[in-house]
Image (spheres, rainbow, N blue to C red):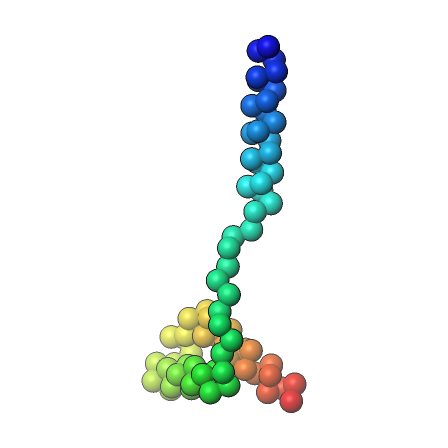
Length: 75
């Protein structure tokens, strides 16, 4: 009897480890941004660059500029 209880605990522990290993963090899905909202966000970043320089940008702001640059090149 003892072996069965122990092996059941092992199975549960292994299955929990698999679930934890395969779980992906839940990501927030942003609402779709209108072109006007996107332009306003880009303009805020450009204003920040004018006032404080490129070094003041966050990682997300830099990504926004890279995304905008790609879109303009692909036109």
